Length: 138
Image 1: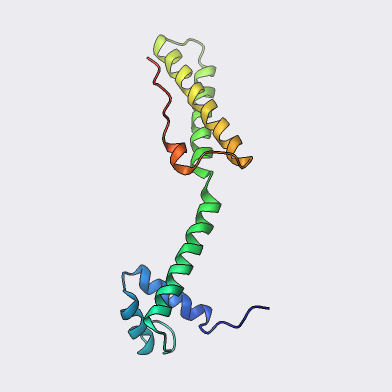
Image 2 (image 1 turned 120 degrees about the vertical axis):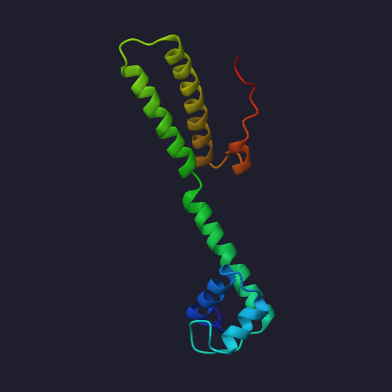
């Protein structure tokens, strides 16, 4: 069983909100001590305030990344699939339509492959997803 926390969730949240508002740990500690943090007054050392805020922000960032990691790729893939469907429904395609269809199909296939790799746990990092080093088709 974990040890009880010295600061309540409300106190921790107040510290994080102040940090997100641009306050520095020393100022947050002072506001908490004076009861101006949106919760009852409490003492928190500047260093503890810094550590709590850093841990909470890191936890939130990791949580957000886990929730949204594939959303941009999935959304782009759906948009591209919509373009493909629209072009395939046209009864007569001109040269520009054919080139757009080819590029869209290529890009869609690349994104789908990357999504599959990520779901299998062997995919590229986030920066790899944004860096397509394949040579451009002319």
